[in-house]
Length: 413
Image (cartoon, rainbow, N blue to C red):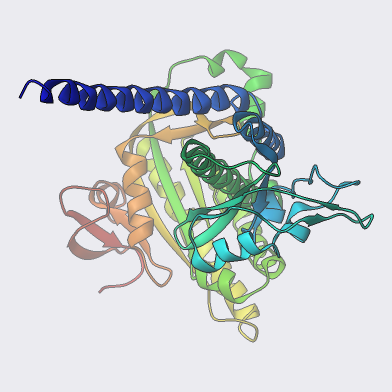
């Protein structure tokens, strides 16, 4: 019994030492990643970030001869460029030469982290070779796609510790996040460019409302919104998505431009202001007169827009199926004034009407089908006796809690 206590104490000491070692190790991993975050945070260019990560990993593993980040994402060339190898006599695209290495091919085939005790020598373009030690490869995944492989080549005679290997895996996880952010940013930029191109085609349709305010009454830029009696007309092109999917972008732009340009005169004739354009739709505000006059003007514009759209569909009948223009109109009191539209890259201002009146007009346009013109009950009362209207009954509309009575200006359903 007397001899057992020192052994027990010895076992406890070993456990305590292991615990302290692991605690120190996890603290080191945390400090490494914290230092990496601090170094890449100020960087904007994706390649600068990847190069800084590669250099940081080389410093973090004393036995490393070379570290590399091989970009495997098929879209990578669109949002970044391959890194250059440091072991060659001249710059070499890492991806072009390292993808064929055994450890890389094994990591791609088995889709898991791979470590070999000694990799094959690296052959340089001048005919010489470089002997290396261990070689590791860790894939960075997004779902089932390998975005990149983080690989480290050790010095001859060196070994990678468990600490080294887990550090490589930590870096691979960070590489995954960096690449996904870069790819998402590229995709968003491409979408913005596409939308900007479309809006460039449509820019002649939008009056210089904001510029006029800046020139004539700049104080309105800082003024609070005011309540005004307005009528809001939303229109969108039914079949736009199908059109975009089946036809070249230039042809779609041409068709949309032809449609929208034909609407400008009817809108301006009825004292409407084209407030927003969004690819397949327009928002138009009628705010120049009293509530009933604004409602009447918006309906006059809607009927003329419909006639123009039917003419263009007849003209294009040999080339495509009809593109219906669906419209929703709602009159009432709205908040009118400057609105800042903040995006990820810029802030722009527009003069717009906001509130339930605008929201209902948009929902009515969403509900319309086949080129219909829909109005709400308050608008119907303002138009009573001026045009025939057709009661569609209580209708559930998107993002509006209670069913509302909806009327069509075109047909009974």
